[in-house]
Amino acid sequence: MSRETNSVRVTVARIEATLADSHAFTRIEPRFYVVRQGTAYVYIHVLPWEDRALVRLVAQLARGVEMTPDLAMKLLRLNARLRFGAFGYVHQGSCVVFVHTLLGGETLDADEITTALGDLSVIADEYDDRIVEEAGGRTMQELINASAAEALFSELDSPGAAWSKE
Image (cartoon, rainbow, N blue to C red; front, top):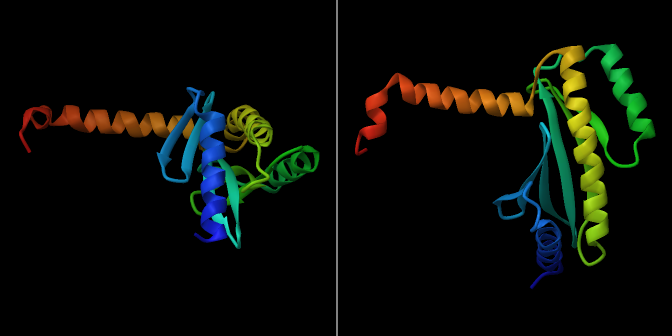
């Protein structure tokens, strides 16, 4: 067994043990999880890195945002004051994100996971609405709701489909 595989395995086990009792925590697939805080979602991805593991925490705050110089400066000023994480911008999708990375493996402990995740979750939940109010776009919760509604209405548009045996 390689050290990389063991480091990833240890990291996954620590995350799952630490967050298992949280109703907000969901395992999406191996090494990929989501935690919901209010209207924000924080994705947790465990990645191999050299002989260690990385824990990448990413909250997509809003999509379709008009990134202005004023908004960029506000986010940079916030970055300078934050304990954990940093705001960023992904051009594809015009998405404002909030990200942080932890070093996984034997040194990762429950306090480190919950403290970083707690800060990211609270900040993401606080700033997703502020960003949309200032720069447009939609929060991740709004996008999920719209997607669910679209799926429901597409089923209602063809009511016989729900009863077909296909």
